[in-house]
Image 1 (cartoon, helix red, strand yellow):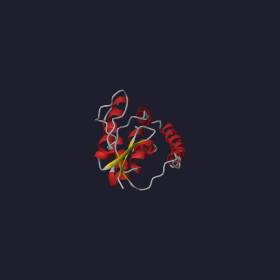
Image 2 (cartoon, one colour):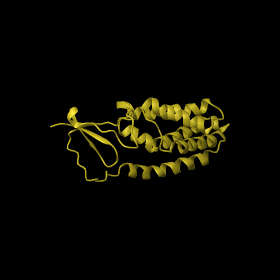
Image 3 (cartoon, rainbow, N blue to C red):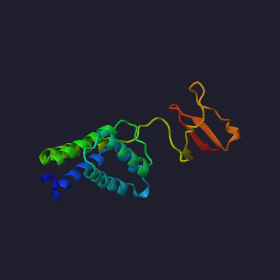
Image 4 (cartoon, helix red, strand yellow):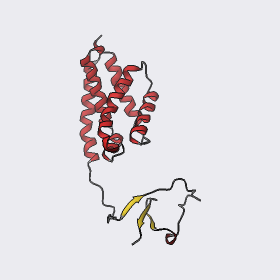
Length: 183
């Protein structure tokens, strides 16, 4: 069977690599250090773990792959994927695995090439400079925190008295509260 040769298995691994490394959610997690100092190594490890997951489990369903990837992202990158991209990533990986399993290596190579071409667009989008929203960072921002546990009344944000705190809170247009040190 052609699917069992090591060269074809490497082709499937290359397919997993191109899909996973082109996934904007993982790129953002790695670029922003969500996986710690070894984020890039975790992303590479994730490729190996995913390809092994496919080989160890026969007849995977899309929801199973989604759950597995979601668990990996949560445990390794402390990231919950809720942008809607997880079903597409899972579908692409399943499609490549089916191609590999059926020995359709030319189709698999075409799929890999298609995803490789998409990488250029993803990188350009991810590398776009931040838009100027009229706000300047003066370096005094220590951190930004959103208190999700505080109850909101009638869809409004709870207010705090700046004099009772050692920080000055300012609510931005988008609903976030920026916490700055008093001067």
